[in-house]
Length: 327
Length: 267
Image (cartoon, rainbow over all chains, first blue to last red; front, top):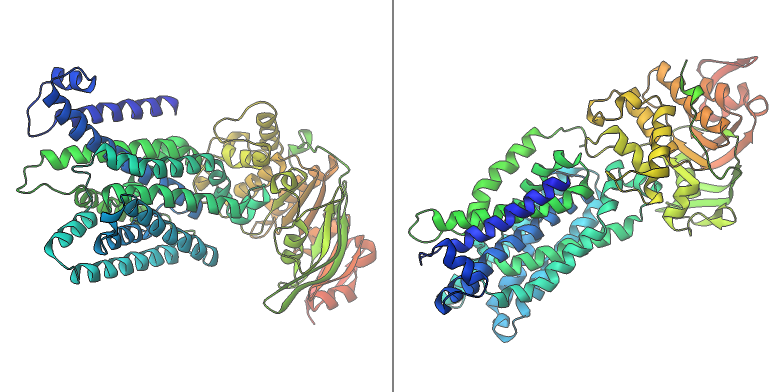
């Protein structure tokens, strides 16, 4: 477990460094290292520290937020298919973020976008958690999540449909497709407080997720405060997912795939899956973001598109292999 | 029939008592439990009997303090279970609910270790008294050989023992079990009841919902009979179990021969 975490952390660092090597300006390893240490030529510093590093860090932060949110939601809802994207949390966050673009609020205050995205995510997570109280069926819950996603998508399409000019249209499409291109340290700084707070809340409340393995009734029997647990997970995933969406738009499925991969390594304990799932999801998005830059396409592939291209089939595969005994 | 008698589970804080008085639960205009009062002491194995829908599970949940009550109290050590912090309550009172879905295929040892949740146990970091309590519970339920197995690979009888071990691992002074032998074969029904009796012999107090009157007659020191949300009788089997009671509670014709219960058929 510990060696696995260290390996994941080291791999993530290596991936972020590799991401700093890539770009239209060819640079040697030595020049990149010097730039990262603040000793390089001013031009190199600008390219590496102001452009490539924040982009890689944004990819990692978004992945970590979605991976931890996915693992926590799966623990709370006791369902391996739960994830911010599938449950419509990301779509709701992105809808709220897009609305600030549409109404021009994003231009008024830099905080409008992250705050809107987080509010959207919190609202959707709360609704999902409330629904989970009423239905024991995992399938019903996923279907309701699909409904949320579709509805948020429909309103989003409406906004696109009514977009006042091609510029805001392009802006909004960027959000919907999901990307960390051209993110700056300023963008990171806006999202970071929410993202960190969300991750911290999830991490603090993680042991309650182990208790939920027994079902809600037995979990409260062994001393879990169910209301508090639900509240903390809703709050944590809302903050983390909302912050991730404000940084990169909608990036789906990474929150399902990463926890699924680490689960058997932590004896299927949702509490212990949180940290490795966050690290692995971060690593996966940094690698995917390297991928979109390496793949020779006429215009750059969006990160969210690549994540869905890989993640959606993985989701189907996990769903098909799932034991159906609990439904 | 079991080797668990040699290595029984341990019970701490013996002598605690659950005192339920005037408990009433209503939900959506329906009365689930009406003015129910009873006590559960250490050294007692109490069977809660009644038809499906008589209010047994609601009574248990109300007594534990996890279902909203309309009125009444339920106290351990003069403190109401509904107002105790859930962790503190769990240290006094272990609960085995009727539905026991396991969400993930965890190893047996981890599921049993969750019985120590109120003691601050985190899975994968089991140490000291907690590790010892889990080990004792595994031994008591004869699960040592299955400890590292995934629960997804166990039979129904083995799983029932895992759930018992989980409840025993808390080493709480009281145990409430809702139909712990449902869906088990006759051998495992006896097996689980033996485990609960061992727990009581160690000084625990157990309240167990049963649908098998023969098992109740054999193991229980006291029977609580429920009908339509009310407790209609509470006393030792010799005093409360007779043909009239079987007719009143279950609508079946039966008779008692010494300590044997014979059910002849529906009325």
